[in-house]
Amino acid sequence: MPRYVALLGVTAAGLLLSGCISAQEMALRHRSACERYGFTPGSEAYSNCLLQLDVGDYGYSHHGKRRARPL
Image (cartoon, rainbow, N blue to C red; front, side):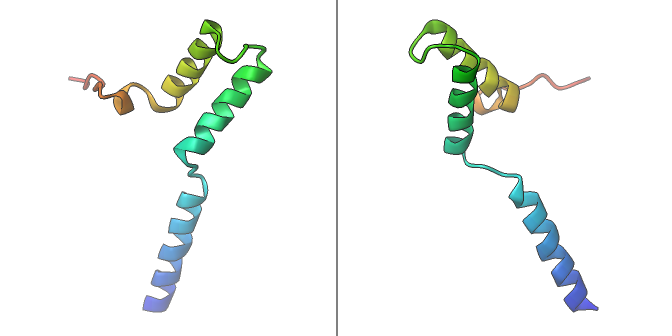
């Protein structure tokens, strides 16, 4: 029985981690998306596109700002 529990744990961890991508991969996806939307790299609109995608994925928490807690 412990063998099945270990196998289940390894399988669950694999499934959870399979959805993870690196920050570099996420940045590449964001740049690619903004270019597909028609924004020119280096323009202010392109920068805003990247910012909106980044904030949409992570919120403000990874920029050192904390989200308000519900009361």
